[in-house]
Length: 149
Image (cartoon, rainbow, N blue to C red; front, side, top):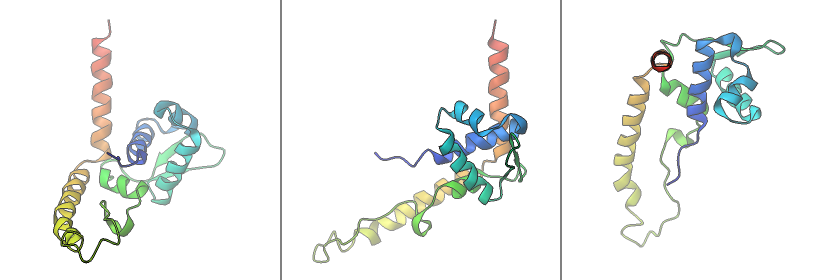
C-alpha cells in the first residue's frame, strides 16, 4: 500500500523542536533528529515559512514560531506541506471504459465513501494542536527521566 509522504510527520517533528527550543532548532540539528538530509528539512521549513508558521533568518541559528502552538492544528500543518490535487486526498484512475458498467460508474459510487474518509481524517487532524503534541512529547521525556536509574 502506498503511503502519504513523510513530509507531514517531518513537519510536525520540525515544529515541535522549534516550539521546545527555537535556538537549538537549526536545520542541521533537526535533520539529525529526523535522520534525514538537511536539504529535505530546509525544503519543508521553506514550506512552513511560506505558510506563515515559522520565521528563519539567514546567518542566524534556529527558527521561531510565528503562530501560537495552541492555534496551530495538525490539519494546518498537513495543508502546508502536502499538496492535494483538487483538495482531494484520493484520486481516481482516468479513462475508464464507458461501455463497462463498472468503469462508467465506479467514481460516482466510490466518491462519497472516499470523501467521507477524508473528512473524518481532516476532522481528527483539526482537533489536535501543536501544543498538545509538544505536551505529549514533554510528558514522554519526563517519564523516561523518571524510569532512568
